[in-house]
Length: 129
Image 1 (cartoon, rainbow, N blue to C red):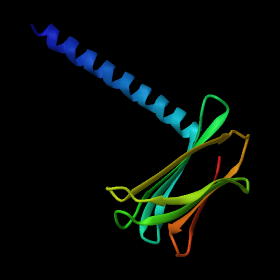
Image 2 (image 1 turned 120 degrees about the vertical axis):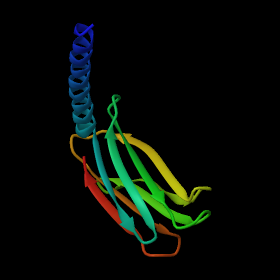
Image 3 (image 1 turned 180 degrees about the horizontal axis):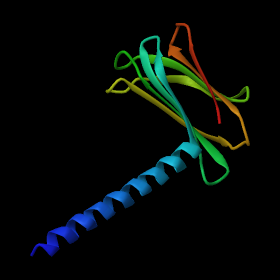
Image 4 (image 1 turned 120 degrees about the horizontal axis):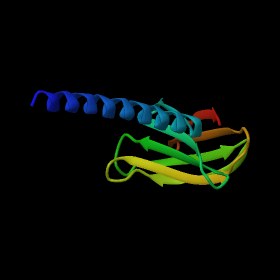
C-alpha cells in the first residue's frame, strides 16, 4: 500500500511539470502573435489588441468599457495611416463596446485606435506589430 501513494505523488509531479511546460509554450505562442495595450482614457478603460491570424491577416480588436449604457463613442482604426474603420458605436447593456476588424498582414505595421464619447476629445492608442 505504501508504494501506491508514492506512485501517485510522482505521477502528480509529472503532470504538474508537463502542465508548466505546456502553459509556457502557449504563453510564448500567444506572445509572438499578439500585441496588446491596456489603459484608461476619458471615461473608459480600453484594451487594444492586434493578433496575427493564420491566413496572412491580422485581427484588430478594440474593447472599451464606457461610463454608461447607451453612451455613443466615435471609433477609428488604422494601419500605417490608412483608415480601416470609422464609425459610431453605442455601449451595450453592460456599457461595453467591441470593434473587431481584419486587415492584410504586413511584416511590420503601426496600428492606431482613436476613440472617445461623441463630441469630445479623442483618445489615441498606437502599437506596432
